[in-house]
Length: 239
Image (tube, rainbow, N blue to C red; front, side):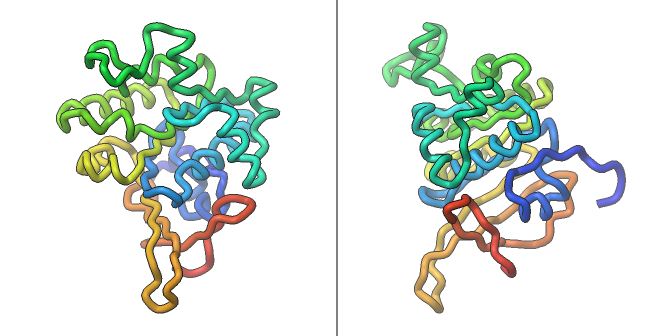
């Protein structure tokens, strides 16, 4: 790419950093989507781990898991998050915790839209001085929303995170992404799709990473084959 280079923040995966000219564009939002078992949450864990190791305070916001579950899952791929939680470099927040501690935020399926937690609220729950953000995942917050309203809310979320200079990984499951016609992909600065498919020659299930969008970045054509190991996601040679 010609012109001024963007500052970068490591993805936590060396080969993806190399492909992205150093990592995710700093201060921007990247969408990671995929079906169950593709490693979406692992991508978020890699990013959070790399960030805190570089001294960047990071918040991991989950709509589905307990903090202890995130810590345990990360430890299974060699990522030890608890010590960063203990020294306050990392916070893991759940929707349930916010319900318990603040009546302003809650996830009641019978609540009216005006009283239900929305995408627009997420910037308000990011602790001060925490510069990198993982949101895992927004799917549950999008399924019952009209497309126009969803696009407005995602645009607001992405713009607000940018105004706050947050480098953000936003995760969305494929079911929600497909139902909402992939509207979130138009709002974010970059997008990655994680795919599982059967190799017709070997009959084996394989995983591929497609970086379909990354502004300000000269990304070689993919997709990139990867595996999930005891150390997380590993890109393989070739494509």
